[in-house]
Length: 252
Image 1 (cartoon, rainbow, N blue to C red):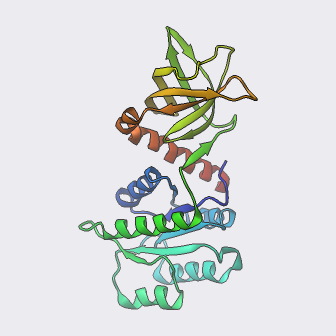
Image 2 (image 1 turned 45 degrees about the vertical axis):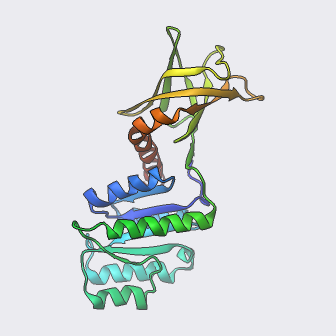
């Protein structure tokens, strides 16, 4: 489930090698970040998440210059999108065009010139998102799961494989409910855990923090820092893919 109040950063028609990577970097910095390649679905997503969102739009793709201006204008003139902050992405450094977006359309998250030689656009976007995240009070990025999410785990312990349902996941810990009565003891070290999402698998090591008073089969496991650092790219890749697949299901 995606919550409307959480800060979300959307990229429309990102340069694949540039902005898909940047979206993943934002996720490692505890932000909800999404990539879309359909401007109709993009507007549908903003209709759903119109409370606390930043939209970075690549105006070099698909539409003409005039069509992009009208597209942005339609977002600006619709009260439903009034709380969404918009930034422009482009290789075009034409001052006339920059003035249209910055002065006439009053874009609030900047006109970012793309470059394969400098990372200034990346630094600026990370700064904008980070600043907005601080203002919104967002903390660690956490995903809550339901029965429909295809995310599973395996824990190998004393020659047995423990399975169950994943209830929540962050870069620091996960909450899970066991599928049978075998209980994990608080403070138990778990050295062979695997998180599985489609074709992604992430090895983890953690410590059992404890279990729920209301559900004795529900446990919280905290990941060990050194092991998390070693495998964090795969872990954050899973989180990024879960976020984006949830969004695609909503706007399909």
